[in-house]
Image 1 (cartoon, rainbow over the protein chains, first blue to last red):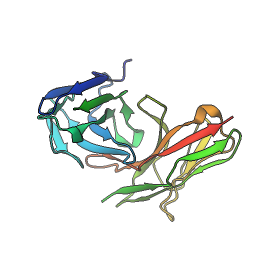
Image 2 (tube, rainbow over the protein chains, first blue to last red):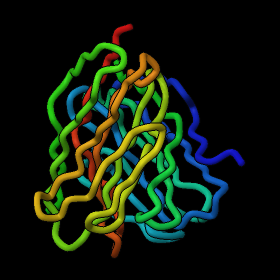
Image 3 (tube, chains in turn blue, purple):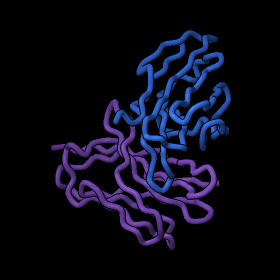
Length: 112
Length: 113
């Protein structure tokens, strides 16, 4: 059982470039989320999904886009990278929130 | 909206010391409460959880009790080890609707031998 798989693990982008962070889970979880982790600020919710075809914005959605065409995959797109998006990004999934979320190992993104 | 407040770190203790990391929350309704742990260079792992008032979550010697009257979920361990050095996050989630996780800012714990 692979759990939540994130790719790539590391990425360097130039300002203005776009890219997609991949997230896949093999646990048939309905709930999936993207967080960014910045020093001293904990984890902040970017976008989330409650099932295939259903997504919504979290606390810090600007500059990011998501889609959920299948239960397994929840990619995060950076439309035009900015240095303020330098962060560690975590994807998480859950069968139901009372059971807790399972997290991927993260993507460390640097925008120069 | 929902929010979580943790005691500020970093926290440095000697091995075998008693650990408390305070966590209080603000929420409508009756959320589930969690402690997650993040070891260096890794993702977050669920450490323990509690889903209703007076529940006690426990795992690996860590404990936390869901206190509705004080809106708290403090993490405790009787005797810490060097291997417990990590960042600890308190979090809550509504049990209905989007069931989003809301995190505290994290507490970095260092245990010295």
